[in-house]
Each structure stands twice: as C-alpha cells, then as structure tokens.
Image (cartoon, rainbow over all chains, first blue to last red; front, top):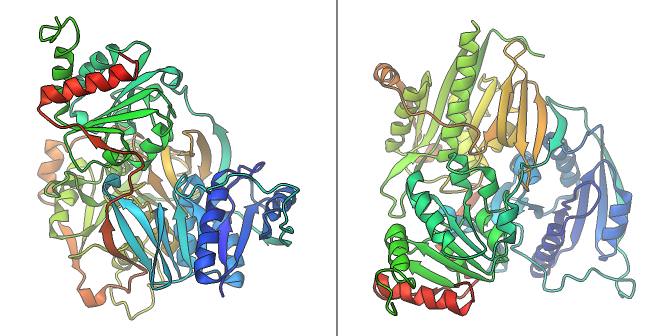
Length: 334
Length: 263
C-alpha cells in the first residue's frame, strides 16, 4: 500500500505541537487504508529532531535541503516533490500554516495530485477517506472527495488533537522507527529571506481582562464601536476587542485584535458582537470560560462555538440590555 | 536585477456573495487589496516616467463582469472575463486562467509553451467564500514562476524593478523577503486602504472593452476534487439559544452574567 506521509512542522529547533495532530490524523487514515506512515522533516538537515520523532516508532526521513537559507517555499516544493515522486504516498499531510500556504498547492500540482485546504475533519465512505473543510466563513463544511492522487491534505491546526498528548517515554514498548537522511540541493530562486520582525505590541490588556466584549463586521459602521465600548464599560476589569477585518479597515489598531494573528484570550466571559466566527478568530478565543454571541444572522458560524446564542440586531439588543441595568430608567427593581 | 521597459501586472479577482442569502455580490475583499496594490505600483512607475499596465482576470458567471468594470474604475487597463456557469476547484480555475491568458483553450492540446507574459501577478490571499488560498499558488506553479503568500507590504525599486516585501507568519510576525521578478504574490487584507472607483475612471471604463471567453462544459478540464455535499459544522459548545422578546433576552443575559460573577 502507498504510505501516508506527514510533513513535520517545526521552527528549526523544536517540533511544533501541530505535528502530533498530523501524526494522529495520519494514523487514522493509515488504519483505515491498511497502509504505513512516514514522517518527513524538511530543513537544513535536522538529525536530532529525526531521532526524537523516530521514538514514536514511525519511519522518519531527515530531508536535508542544502543551499536553503531559512524557510523557502520553492525549496520545499522542489525537495518534497523529488522525495514524494520516489515514495509515492497516497496522502501527504501538512499543517495549514504560513509555510504550507506557500508550497502545498504547487507541490500537489507538481505531483499531478490535488490539495485540499483548511481540512477540519475526516470521514469514511466505501472504505475511502473523505475530508471536510469550512466554507462561507465557517457557516458550513464542504465534504471533499479527491479524484487525483496524491492528495495533499492541508490540516487546520487544533482540528485533530490526539486524545493523549503524552509523548512516548523511555518506558514505551515501541522500538524507534528507522531514520534515513535524504539530501536534496536547492539552487536558489528569485526569493531571498532578509529577516524576521516580531508582531507589533499585541493586546496585553485583552489577555488580562475578565470580560471581553468584541466586535466584528456585523457592527456595520465604525461609529457603532462607541456602543461596544459602552457595553464593555459596564463590566469591571473588562476590555474591548475587535476581529481582524476591523483592524484591516483601520477602525482600531492591531493591539485590539483578537484571533490567531492577534491576542489569544481566555477571559471568564467573552461576548462576541457581530462576529461571524472564522476559524482564525475561533482559535484565539477557545480558552474563554463562557462564550456568548450576539448576531443578527442565525446561521453565523460563531453560534456553533458559543455557550449562549442571542439572535438580535446588535445595537437594539445592547440598548435593551443597558435599559435593564440597576439604576437605569427601566430597572425592574428600581 | 531585471531591466524591464514596462511592467506588466496581472490581478486575479473573484466575485463572491457577501450576504447569507447569497443575493448580494461584491469583489472578494482580499482581491480589492491586491488590485489597489497593483494600481499603486502602476502609479509609482508612471510618476517616474516608466510604463506599467494592469490587467485583471476573473473567472465566474456572467454577472462577474461587474467587478471587472469596477476594477476599470479603480485603475485597471484591460479586463479578461472567463465565463463559466458552475463552481470549479482552485486547480481547474487556475488552469483555465492560464490557458485563457496563454490563448489556448483546447484542453486536448498541451499547455501553451509560452506562459502569459506578466512580471508581477497579484491576487487576494483567500476568497471570502471558499477560503482556500490555492488559486494563486497553483497559477504560479503553472506559469513556472516563484510565489509567496500572505503579503502585508510591497516596496518596489522603480529603477531595478526588484521588490522588497513582508510576509505574514502564523502569529502575526513578519518575514522580510527580497524578490526578483517575475513572481506571484497573494495579498493579505489590511496591506492598504482600497480606493473607491473614481468618476473619471468610471467614465473611461465605459470605453474599455472586456475580453470575454466563454468556456463550454466540454472544455473544462477534469476535476482534481469534488465537493460531495455541504454539512453542518460540528458544535464545540452547547449553543443554548436565548429566546423571547428583546427585553426578555436582555434579562436572561443579565442573570447569566450575574451567575458568573462578572456583574
């Protein structure tokens, strides 16, 4: 049987946790198709990392790309396509992150296969693995059948968290998998890495707040942010956040941004106002104890990831809420 | 370093539904940023006595010509509309764009030996509806040019035509890249503030002709993947719906927040 390949996600020094999610998915696909798993570590040559991963008992290939300075999408594409032409895997699992975003679609084409983006679940029909991915901003999932092989599966981080995160210890009965080194030269291309700079100041006050009231595109106009600020100020130790599109449009600065590329928050209560619920936003708020969503669209994806759902026009609802507060004119006890 | 007489820029744009009922359409938000960036590069070059041409291409239904007209209003020079009446995978979309711009629509023939001659190809990082981010990187692979994704800053040296760009990484960090053309870049939202079409451009747009190519179903390449059906996403939390009048919902929320000790 053709193997299931995992492209190991790492930062050059350590294996990133998402790699174990890829291995978990690879094991599921391999079990259903009676095939084996092979781990591939693209990089400058990382023998220690290969040795560490082989402790999982899985065959591991240290894919040493010579002549590559840091990550280079073209180098990954060239080296991986050469290796996979020889290995002939049926599925190639990659993390849908900044790296694979560059190289995975082109890699699939070079191998005359297909690539499925944003994969969040695995299904089986007639002994065949099928993958789902979100569409319409997460409001629906599309169930996708690959009709060419290999199938490059671009896996959404956090979608396949293994049930037991314990890494195999010395006591493990599993003998280490074989380690091989494959060297591929990269002649260089028109893209040269010049350096990396850290993100601007992220929202520290967001990360400390007990209550976060966050606004998304459902807010309509920039002026309506005043209403959200007012809503947030009702709570002590609270902060206002916004979803990425509002930062992109310049309504608020980056330090207000909640989500995977902004602040990852874990307040007592997160109130999402007019936020549709993209996977990038959800990844930043999943640590919240209670999530309450207010949205006029009953099909908004955020409702699938909320504890309490309120289908209402945002401003009308905030106004109604403020009117029942103690001390307000409509205070039932006042 | 490349010495070019004129810079030929292509922007791939897509029309997407923007409301839950699917009745309102607009240019994909990410493509608006890509188009704005292309027009700014053109303006920079024209200001310095260099030449630049911005072409736009869109694959989609009849209605998609609306966004090509809008692109004329923003500053695009030529428009190509590849008319298909159904949704296609990213790979098939990229292949049809490639064939059209290489003027070879017969799927029985080999891909055109000479790829479409663009120095810079820009498109949005993802589309709002399909959210894949694949059409750009696949088109780059077909054209045999380098590709970089999630670009948040582009600076052009108008003498050498070399680019310095910033690419967004997973946690919002940025990687700086030096690039020699040709290249395809996919643009992240927030890179600029897209302009509205100007009246003078819209008047000129009326005289610009869209090159329309209709692709009949038998000329569409075989699909690499198929969407079997749409499903409801799994719930990660209970999703209790608060019911009643607006005031009743407000009272219920008040008691939920009170119980959690935040009021």
